Image (tube, rainbow, N blue to C red; front, top):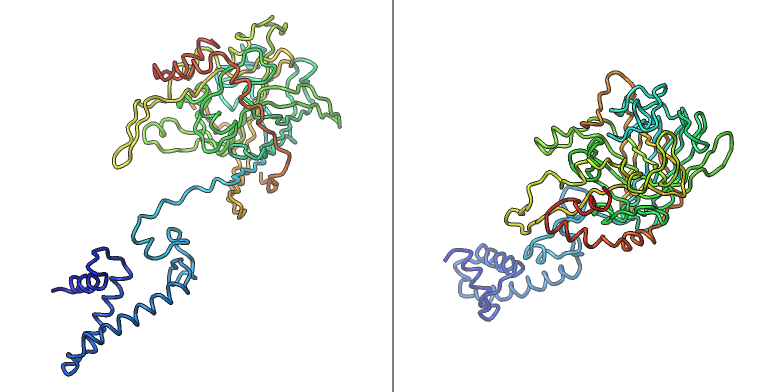
Length: 471
């Protein structure tokens, strides 16, 4: 009989023929048997059963004392007594008898604090050419092109962005403030040389005054307008595809207030315009779709949109637009994201030993609800190139930071194409956030909202329903 069988036999006798063994029993009887063998002489063999019984009782008492006196946490020897992550608050027996779960991401109070400088004022967003040559409000004396991010001009030497992003905005801590100097004039609300401040007002998708409310995209509604770690735009078909694909540390959608702060002035020129902000880098789409690797084509930057195109209002050189026409620039009705899901072969079956199947994608791209007849014409697309971001996660206050200083977007070496593709002080992360109490009020009032989702599930189309409504 080998040692394992002897141990099992001793345990079986001890447990009254109970075949349920645990690690304490096995370890105890293995040590008892071994110790008995070493200390038993030929003259003492007759006393062996009695000695074994006494040693068994003594060992059980010692194990019981240790079990109640030592905290149930395992430690690495030689590692300054650091507890093992998988065994915290677990006894040795429970750890060995059951598989440990994977550690979960710490999603409590996850905050990204961002500061950025060196802003560019862009003439266009993808195919939405507003101020570039042959644009809707062409200003060729200011902008020489409109097809790349390098077409932007300086947004002022003192332009800054300061923002706080709370994932899911559960505690209404999300806020931002951005300043810039306008390089163009197109009405009393935007004058060349004047300095403006954009302040986040809310993280709702539709304004109460929106002329043509649209359905909130799935990737936005899941995080109440403020999300982290999101690939979007470009070939992903998650939101508009005509701008470069970005890998975002954070993003938000909502509404903002624009104030003229020139020379100490404090005049609100627009108080409810659609805004979209991203903190991330431009991705190499060829690399991503050939090897699923995120290769950055730019440093981390802040991309900020503040847009309103009023319907039923006489616009210079354009005339009066309906709500649908006014929103037909963001994006254009021909943007493929409105009719195409992410480039994945659905259904997607999760490989064994895991389980699950994704039958069709959730609808991810819709027309931005930028038509508000109560607000003036505004098209502000800013790119802040020198960015510092600090992520704070959990109640322990631990943080990690990322600081990128971008090369000048006007330099000859920069080739970031929108059709394809300074050291700052530490951010404080403070400020009054905005709430989402009315986040889904307008969405729930849209008569076609539920029909839209049903249509998408039936045909696997990303947003055919939205096309019918908005395009």
